[in-house]
Image: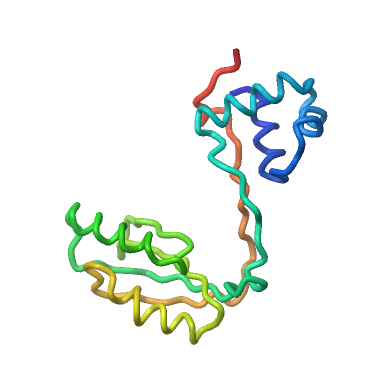
Length: 160
């Protein structure tokens, strides 16, 4: 991946609706080579999709909590069962396995604390192997950067 590929990725993260004409102008290429690079980045899996950024409050998901989860067992089978069950709960925005004093950190979005309490009681506390949870209510989001830093060392591509 060269600096032009990096610039393409940065521009598309900022605005995925850019036309190829506008994208090519911003990265200093003509339309055809720019389109070929975008297709190559898509084919290689570097660009995994294009998404709309939604206002969380407007769609009823402005209440954010972080939940530490400690499991009673961390066998491969138990981890797999937990992971699969988490994927079926739409309110869980992200789930990260953690190396530390607990096993997972969940980011959960709901309309309000009452809806969160229901999700916790009906879904999260009943996940496979859950031993203990700790909930932390987010009071203010200081930074929630959606764009990934684009670094050349992480590249899986070479420019033809």
